[in-house]
Image (cartoon, rainbow over all chains, first blue to last red; front, side):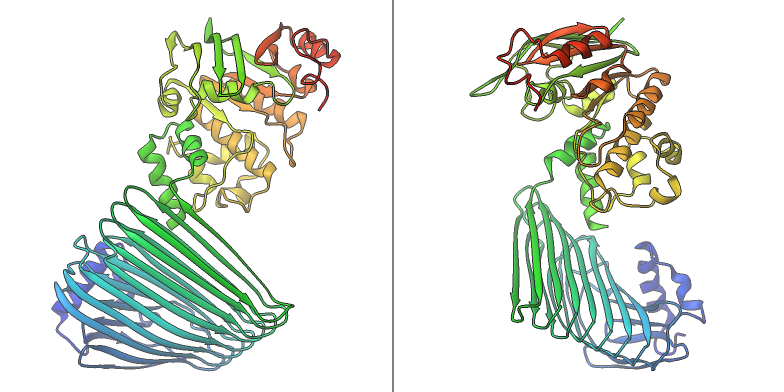
Length: 317
Length: 238
């Protein structure tokens, strides 16, 4: 631990992480793997048996090759902590993740930008999930109140036969700034994909989420679920694409956007099927908070403001 | 003592007179059943009492605990002690049953209220109040949430209707729980076998109360379809 950088920067990052509700004790636990980077400095890393991490610093960020060896099931989540504590800067994270046959791992990424006034965080990931392997990836952002951050997470994922891939992107703390999610997944035979994104935008936040799943293998299944709440002058555009190209493939795109004030939301579900035995469905709901939900909560004694808060927190949970 | 007094209440829309000078009184701790076929104004009356958006009396007064509440918002009426279980309770994403029951009062014991509506807490407390619940489960959870509020007046809009309808015994159990708690209940139904558990009943037709009094007699009157003000089409079995 702490092999690369002064403890002060690590302390500062972990302090921000702790203030955002994170558990700082993960760094001291020998059974929990982690990788911590501030800007382009690697601050701390730990691996566990069956997990290979080859990480290095680049001029503008971090490049890491992560491999989970065949048949290894990583017991505890692997924590990835990335952040920029300065007001200005760029952090490019390049990840090459491979889960070998019948392995499994859960990665939890904490992205911390508490002081960003002009910061770019770019994540470029290539993920390959082997036959029968399972990967869970949860990414949670902790932003400050300035809104001067640009977050561009991009990933290209390939899932092998009987593989499973679950992602959960959450940005509900602080200002979003400018967000450009671009995920693309190709699912092999009998593979399962579940992509979930939750974002809460305020002020002039600009949210773009594009998620695509190609159901290439027989009996592959997927769901793209997006939940966005926006207020003030924020805008959001959500594009969910699913292609059903194989016999027995089943896909669903589910987008809900709640807006108030002068916010503007758009949902673009694109579904296409090239195999007559595949089926892809979609649903999208955009609008203000549901009137019946409001009335029900108010009949329980909640004020209109409390009712909106409960509903929005619920859909973003 | 009267808890709720509805005085000559009229509610008109552009094309229709939904309630037509309706008057009704519910006493403290009284279970009052409101019987009527579909389209007679039962749910409209409920929406006017609770204060749903767009439901404002054209004329007449709604008096609760001695105070005219015509202009109060839903939550303000709830603070006075009125609440309502809708006929088709709405679903919520991301809210657990446990949190839903304790929305207004964090100190309650949610499991207790689930047991009161015949649900085993260990199977339901951590489930979401979303579309994964069946219609019957959702209705029971709504009733449990209303019980947890300990209201002065609970409006139950057709708890016995729907695909997963609750049994007569389920309804009796819930009504008994409200009575034991000292709550008044306005029980809206179109099933005469439910009416007999009430202290008093009224039949509504064409926006008016056409018969009021002993539940057995009102149920008998309802079954006989002898309503004197409608043309027989509304009061016919539907």
